[in-house]
Length: 120
Image (cartoon, rainbow, N blue to C red; front, side, top):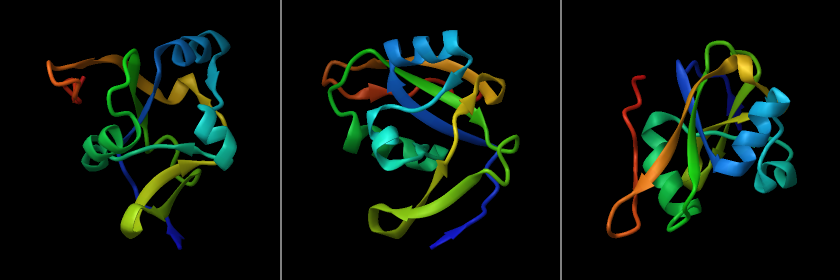
């Protein structure tokens, strides 16, 4: 099941090196899991913490990328994942023109990721 939902901002987590390569190329074609699944996985603000815990636990050198969801309206598909929750997916490369910002993710003393300020 899929449907269109408008989100002002959606988020991508990926390895710093992969993101730096994407910035140089002018587009992000996806991480290994994205390429295998045929779409780029994103999360909404409310999904970020669980995404980090489930898929990136203990991993260092990660970037958090904020993407203009309104600019991708009509291209983002929300599809059921984890327990039926709808997650945003993009079935094409992400242009750097839709990226609002990217920030490194730090970790606390328990190796849990610390989300940066999501407003800037």
